[in-house]
Amino acid sequence: MTPVHFSFTSAFTTGMMGLIFHRSHLLSALLCLETVMLGLFIGLSLWTLHHESTTSYAAPILVLTFSACEAAAGLALLVATTRTHGTDQIKALNLLQC
Image (cartoon, rainbow, N blue to C red; front, top):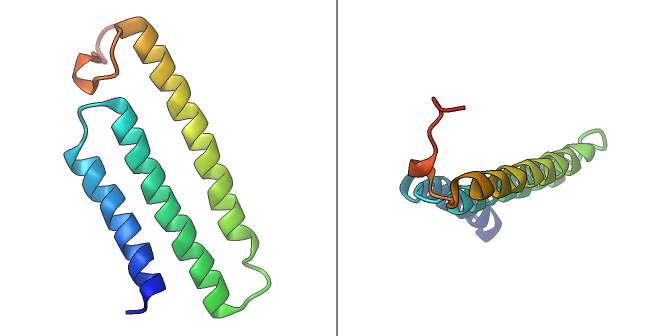
């Protein structure tokens, strides 16, 4: 395994493990999701460079765009829940309450 593939695999695995084990705060879950998206971006960029196809150069940029949209929506949800509930802990959120 090359160091580049190791960095992709470790970024993705670290993000997933962080998402599994650190779910107490919404901000930490959002940061772990961003780490997963960064790992996917690196992997897709490496795949594009490895196959040397000119048609798939837009795919990593598309993933990066979706990652930015996901971050913006996540931060908007974080601000909204912090204003309404006073905390960003996931345990404080009650989905059955309007």
